[in-house]
Length: 374
Image (cartoon, rainbow, N blue to C red; front, top):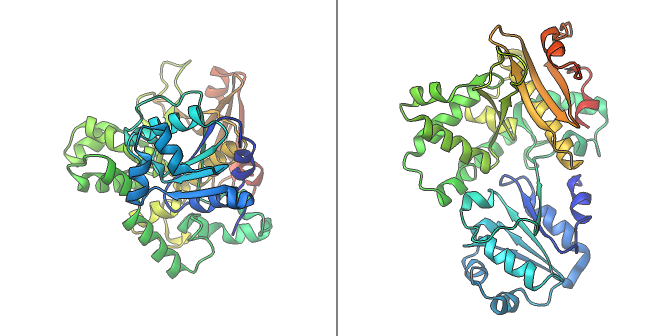
């Protein structure tokens, strides 16, 4: 079992009068992490699985007295899969306002606003964390750089779900099949009125095939024979259940900068490859560049989040096809990165650097990427 980097950051916020919310896709290890956090408190800690109906019913009651009778006199309490609780926002508000001495940790495999059950805002009452699949930084606990490089192709093919990493090819594919079949859409189907689930599945396949390329909402809608509004809604749902994330275009200084499209990436590359039914070795693939780009951006996100850094992130392109894969904006400065699997000979983006003179530019290559992601 790998020690999750975010655990230390979470523990810094214990018993400071805040609800701690841990978001993340199903199967990324939220239950394991929350139990690890409360383990030192022994009999003073309580774990509650909110997928059990009885627990949900008790916790849906908007009464401080009844909630306290259910929570008991424990010092620290985990509400696992808390999005299952009706009016979860109100429940958490009552708990933190009336019983500030009890530390509540709530986990969710979907954003609570997707559950649409926040009757009262939690602004100022909660601190949120996201738990990703395993990171390269966490794997380095047991692997040196040489061993990691030997694992790199496997990571690009099967991803970094805790239950997938380190498995044989056959075992990894079977684990990914289980996750994709049983968990990927579970919250969306349970919490949202999805009238055409086949469109959701097809949409995910389409954006998976466009990995590393720009995605047009209008073109997706035409292909799926549906409306742009439906496509936008489904992409939003997939983001709020931590299946995908979007990168927006940076457009500020130049008239010819693209601004209306986005790029779609996956919280786990293995899931992406399973969705398109392609776990072929890298030598037989045409999408290695997209896989490398997804890997680098995702690992950078993990590093930033675990360090509690939250830069604005973009890609950049002009209508003349000048482009940059990834840009971070922090402290008023832009830091641009180009991800290259094989070619190191990349010219500096002159037009971008002239338009944004306070910017930096770096190339992230497969032979030199550790500093960028860990």
